[in-house]
Image 1 (cartoon, rainbow, N blue to C red):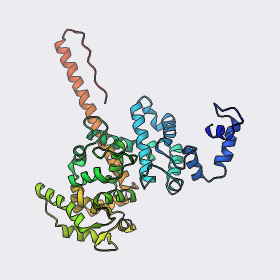
Image 2 (tube, rainbow, N blue to C red):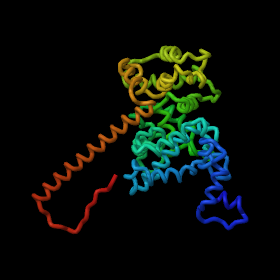
Image 3 (tube, helix red, strand yellow):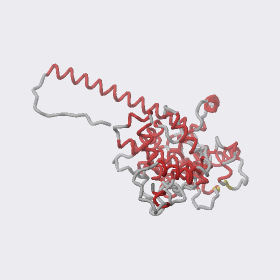
Image 4 (cartoon, helix red, strand yellow):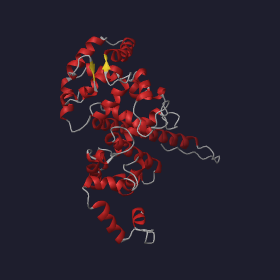
Length: 376
């Protein structure tokens, strides 16, 4: 209607969409263009040359209202809002790789965004649409954030993030995440003392799948302390020194820096043996091992798992149904969360039965007090 009113000032302003206006819109804005450009022009605002975060909201709200796989959220406005935020942030994470907060027509064309929107429109099981829209993936992201956000202010502190993954991250990388990691939508005034929920989504997607370009650039930027676009031995040694100290404190066998670096260089095969650049990690043969170096530098738990890896398990992972490391992690973590929730419900039922038995035995007088159980 806005376009029609601007283009047809001689007519009365429209307050509802009419058939002539719809035909005019199709012929001007849709018909001359191919599907990716139509999608781009449909989502963005008429006076903008890019898609901004809020431009996706009407479409996610329509999805929440109409998709059979999301009907159970109908009476949960807060979770609907967080689901929408999660989907939009995941879209920007994968499509807007420069983290400008502005998706261009070229970025839409080079992404799988149009295919994902078409798939979620056809697929009744929302969890089969693992790109962006899966409810299970949202649940994993939001629950992980909720577990760390103890004061419920929807912000994560450095101390909170140190607890992620059973204290697997070093304090040095946590400081770098807060100081230098890409933020999705904060560009003018960035709060470097906290991570918002959207910032946490960027972190967690990068942490649990280090085999894609976006996550490699995320962690490369964090480890590249001097910002020269190269990882040299001095930078890597400073991160690994923290890992060595943690190994000693926990009683693990020490792996010297030189041995670790030699092993990683043999796997990555950089163009220049004196330093690493982002392109070294992008080689096809490096996609499944690129994360091993980052884990060695700042995630002790994952590095120890890598050192003790079982070749049979690794082969099973390569042959399983999951397309990405993130899909595999999200499935496992969702099942863990579901089992924990089921155990809590069973425990609550047992407590209720015990309470009923005690009430029948004691039969106290009613004093007018009303008790209620707070929902999760």
